Picture (spheres, rainbow, N blue to C red):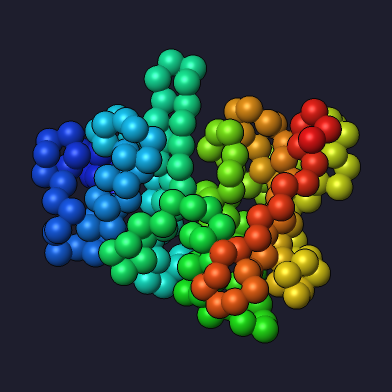
Length: 196
């Protein structure tokens, strides 16, 4: 289901969270949980699910509410009909679905593409990957800003990535699997615009 068709289904009342399409069912569950978490009506949210093939058996999503200059958001996952909105626990489920153990199973860019939806940020973030996205960060004094890369953190399975959002134009994040399979992942915020 595309983002547009999901919005249309919600606006026309045709979105059935018990529908036969697994993606439609998962996005309906995500929407209901996000609306409750953010304390806003479900039809006031924009839901951005990641392609359901990115993480086998898991739907990763970000729900955003905005009114004027106010923005609230939450990211999470739907696994087996259950919604998880806690970022570290949600990312732990992603690592488990990817089969992480003692070895890396995904590229740093694949990990960052999912993790950016689950980091605890003030506003929805996007990963900086291209030179055009990274150049402004370097001009602001973040000379080490780079595309997502593997790190030695988390037993050699960590990923460092840089993000931008409307509140902080540059923030460094590290993410690595938790201590046990399926356990909460570890997010560590590094430098951010303003010297954080």
